Length: 199
Image 1: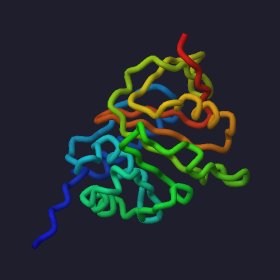
Image 2: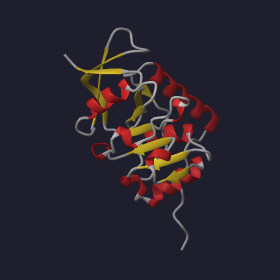
Image 3: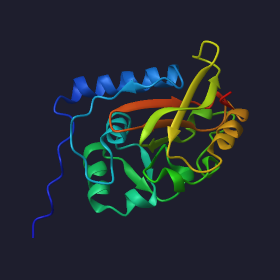
Image 4: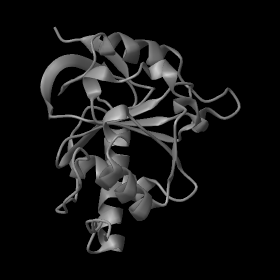
């Protein structure tokens, strides 16, 4: 029996990957601000197009990639990511350059991932959360890239996630960077961002 065909991704790899890369950089430079992702392709469930676009842009054959239990249990998803990125899938979150989380409410704590080292803080894990909404106003964000403060919220997330982000910020320049991807949009909270409850 022939294996199922792997769905195509970017139809114009150069143009679309550059557009997604710009959206990622803008999200990191302006925490809490949402941007559009150039998707328009189908992905095998439970992998969402927004998160797939990020990984197809950032990951390659030198990238250790960790998937949560929901994604790693899907052969169609693992085959798709291996085929389109060449990334090696790892079981140890500490060894991952990128981590993709589909079941955000059951995500491991941020401290389960590589925090980088004083000499190489850039060797920390970047987490990509698949989420349903980026339209909340639960938090106030401040720090580099934000003029004054901005409000931001995302769902779903694990209980106590704001405290995890606060502790992550307290460790900067160590700590992880977090990207949130809905079906077509992206936002980020880098480790340098301060997080407070909305007034």
